[in-house]
Image (cartoon, rainbow, N blue to C red; front, top):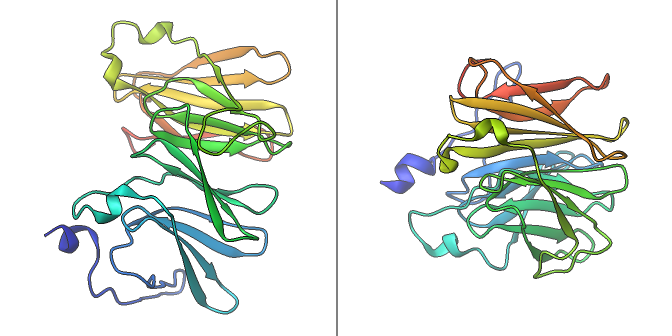
Length: 247
């Protein structure tokens, strides 16, 4: 039943004038996070099999790398959400492991993996700044975290510091309902954006100024109470998707 519902057995590629489908090389991948590196390779992660895949669009070939420790791989009905896959300045690929609250780094030159304990519980979003350092949020943490890439150490959460967010407006709401949305770095302006939400109850956007360490809070109207996805455009404007609506 699980495979029939989630794994797309017998998938056949399709296409139209706008979209071309590619069938992944393994069954029941359940891919989620995806990114494209500077060489045009497409990277994706399997939430079920615990593999990091690379698709070379020039040769039309796939290659997959097994993440060394992925507990849900052997459990027939479990998977770990990989919300983000992203390349750093050195071309290494980073991804989140929701189930174990880990961050994985794939070294592209040695094809090996390192894991780091995420200080943010259930890591859901991260972004790199102009210096290659990381800003991170987790679903259950409700804080912003800064990762100094020169100080991180595999197997630990060393190198990360917490930046507490002012959450006074969420008082009185069941703590379990309050979660982080995502993070987006505007390196050009030295600004980090993040969101916090109580699904369909309350939503706020936070603007963290890196130089001054000041945080500005933007309250959202009631109909925009679930801000999740964030992205910054070339003019420094923040775009946000609201998970509770079609807005």
